[in-house]
Image (tube, rainbow, N blue to C red):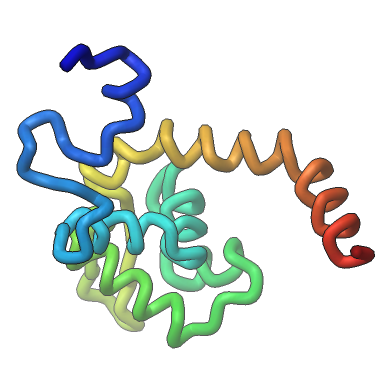
Length: 133
């Protein structure tokens, strides 16, 4: 069987054969789910330029509740994408940053954001056509 460059790009199986994102039990689905989550994406975008405090994140990400932001940050920290630094002060100061692993997503996230900006008018038009039909 001959494998073309296109086949390699669209393969659902990792190069080493250990993962297949299309398989229900594949752990990469959790990663795709995490990165594809709206709040996770927005937190990762917000932290891309640098470290922010919780209140700065909440202000920057309009519409996120305190509870959802807390849950999202905890999950991203658990996944090793975000780090939390606590400073012993009164009141306590907590800062969030991307880890090197989280920062390694920055170019990919910027590409997704750029694609969305570039194609939003087309998507909006398609939605309008669909809703009228």
